[in-house]
Length: 145
Image (cartoon, rainbow, N blue to C red; front, side, top):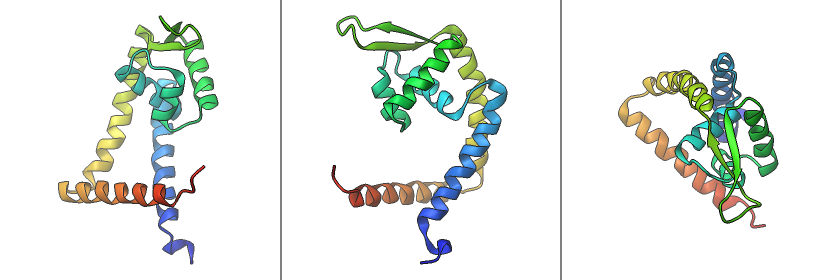
């Protein structure tokens, strides 16, 4: 099957284009895409564990630990022991982290809005539905561990 007929190739190109664009627009805010995703999810889930955050961001726990270490070194997050589970660290945004996220989010939302503006409401709904079907089929095809 030629690459031009493989849906996976088209999905990957779209993902790479989105990631490259977000990388470029987030750079002036001083964040990587992974750091931005972590801050965004932390804003909505204060106190979340690194493992849960990794699942939300779609990265491995070791990768998330590296992301969190970098964010903590820049005083964008604070990590404190959980009240009951002392070996679990709760992670929260600092005031500086909220400020950096606000700047970065304006930049990222601009990209998302430009992308969404290319489609009618019906096309966006159809695309969202088609992508959800892709996820469902691919998850069904994944061998069990």
